[in-house]
Amino acid sequence: MTETALTLDRIRKSYRTGLRRRRVPAVEDLSLEVSPGEIFGLLGPNGAGKTTTIKALLGMVFPDSGYGSLLGRPLGDRRSHARLGFLPEQPYFYGFLNAERGLHMYGRLFDIGSGILAGRIGELLDLVGLPRGSHLTLDKYSKGMLQRFGIAQALINDPDLVIMDEPSSGLDPVGQKEIRDLILGLKERGKTVFLSSHQLSEVESICDSVSIVNLGRTVKAGKLKELLSVPGSTTIVLSGGGPTDSDRLSRAFGEAREVAGETVLEVEAGKVFRVIEEARSLGMELVSATPARRSLEELFLQTIRETSK
Ligand SMILES: Nc1ncnc2c1ncn2[C@@H]1O[C@H](COP(=O)(O)OP(=O)(O)OP(=O)(O)O)[C@@H](O)[C@H]1O
Ligand SMILES: [Mg+2]
Image 1 (cartoon, rainbow, N blue to C red):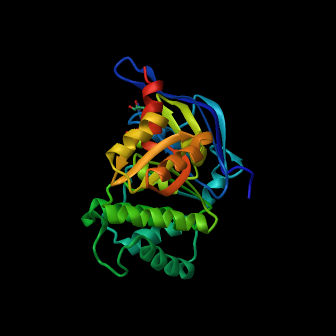
Image 2 (image 1 turned 135 degrees about the vertical axis):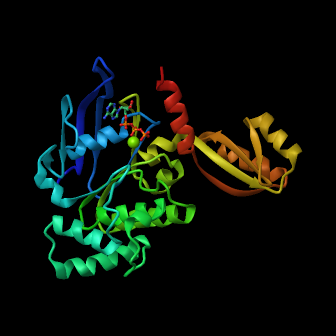
Image 3 (image 1 turned 180 degrees about the vertical axis):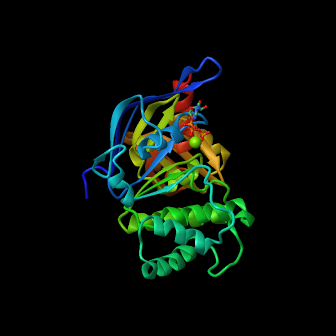
């Protein structure tokens, strides 16, 4: 394995649009790095440049400037593509094929022998939750079924790196959970997964690292655990108290909230024992004391607010 699964270094890409063919920037000075074996999430509002970034990674658009590497080879080097799987944002498949014949066609593009391919197609259909042996052609598939087919197609060559542009798009909540588990399963098998997503809860539950892009630039990046932790702050959850107890704690230690019958406070690490002693003297029980975390949604919204014009 190479040291990094992929890198982008100061990528710029603009498109010519309109009658005057004016250059409009889609990606400006975007850098990122993905380590082997991790699940990496690319986040950003609509139009931030995620799909353009993915297209640049895959050699589907040529950056105006900047560098990058994919599985140890420079961007655009097709030799890395045999070890790569890709799920496009708006996949197009031949509608007259059924799932097995469609996957067979993609497998043949990778020169996979018929014997191996037959076994793999069955396994992939099971993996993404599509029936084996169905005569239903792809033009009759629902959006969610097509997305599942797209994921199976992305995995046909048993890739080391899978790039997915919005993998849970169009899937119902059960389907989204299945895809989350499938992506975690890929990681367990040592694969690297790069995905773009608007599903912040999905990203929060499966990604190791994220990069938030806004207006074509990376505006926040790092290990998710570190980005979400609030240094030096502890969340204390107490039970057995009423509103008067919460008020007393609020006056002494800052805002105490009532959440689902429990009292929740965030305090500086140095005050934890004092809060617990005070709570005990009020007849309350300690439920938990954990390092404070903010949600990815909070981080995302705050980051976008701060970095938008
Ligand atoms: N082929 C193209 N020609 C002209 N402009 C384009 C083209 N493709 C993308 N753009 C523009 O580049 C910008 C970034 O688009 P991109 O599709 O990369 O965003 P995105 O982050 O994937 O958005 P979404 O979350 O909506 O999928 C947008 O302003 C878009 O209009
Ligand atoms: Mg997109």
